[in-house]
Length: 519
Image (cartoon, rainbow, N blue to C red; front, side, top):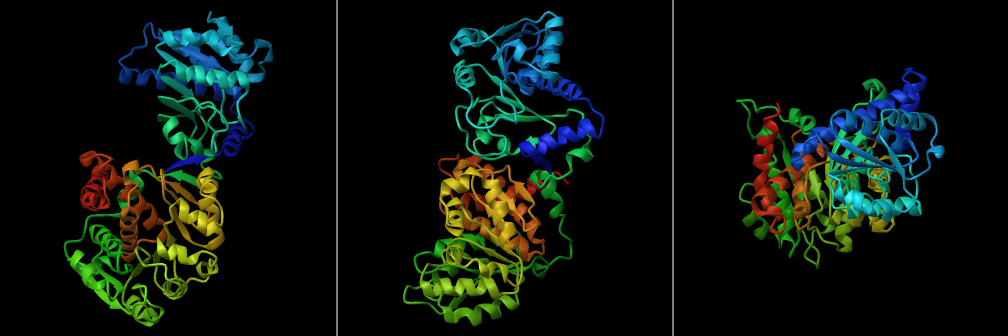
């Protein structure tokens, strides 16, 4: 897993590297600029470019990011490129290591033009082969100044490939929404480690391809105090070793799915199909009596149980004892898809969340049942894994969807810690939070998965992994990663526009095969 830093964490890393490890600030800046230049040069073949004679416009601010840009200019010239440097400040405003790197750049004969208006360099940027954005780094807060905002717009309007240093200028490093214009990068060379804003929120699209540049901070120093990580395929593959030749269906767990109602049978069936494709040995769907014949016809490989139903044709509260008995001989439970929102059914869902002594996935209508009843989570008898989309999380917290999306990592972490649950906050770069405050960001998945039923499939996959005996934290990470990977593989076949939940189910086999290649 790759560590992911907030701006404050990165400042502390730099400060400790200087104060405790004896690494000079100028050395860190030199390493950053040299590594960024190397990453830029290595990426040139993607654009059909080469270093010799490459025209590069480097637009610098007065802070540390600008100092990195001055170092980039020196190393690009050494490689045979033709850098032109533009400074959004007066040289006399530079200080510390930034001023020192400016003087070093000038000593080797690289000129620098002070920019007082964005229009003054528009034509120069448009004539460049590559533009380097060195305006604002991770320490920037709030909206950019008028000059810097104008330069960001000019960079974007140049039509040239842009390489951003550390983060695209204007993009908050901590993942919150931008307060002004943001550079749209082709490549972002980020220093020492990933930043939250590059793996969550607007930065996922705006940062382009992200390359982490080693700036000389020891690995053990980088690992201190980090609680957010980006999931990698090699983190998930070891969780699924080759099956033993003497395995049988009992070796891979029995999942109970409590889902479905009349008119919502598809949700229950998709959940069960996802669980079967995710390797559960056995799956039983417990559903409203009126829905059971339809559910049974949709899932040939799973079993089904009819339950007493309400007048609304959803599962009745008096089904509680039957469900608890069913759960007693199963390894895990998944509850919620298509369950219904009848008051009696909601009471049943809360009771089961609180009482069933089995690991449980809580999704969809069962999440809605918990609104204003979150104490039931704290008193739960076994691990609970919640899979809300942003709207469901907003209802659970009593806030707007915009507030949830503004800080997805922070919202998921706070909810998991406060309520003692594992949380998968779905969406672009699903956020996975554990009760201990650890957060994982998932890199797989695509916009084509934003269609009805894909969440039900995820619930089944996660339920299967819990039934197979994976601890809740590992099960959530594996389920989200594989669900997204299957979605990516399905999109590769049918495209994002035509993608439906059944395509994700059918692609799970190939997703598992992809994992096996990493072992």
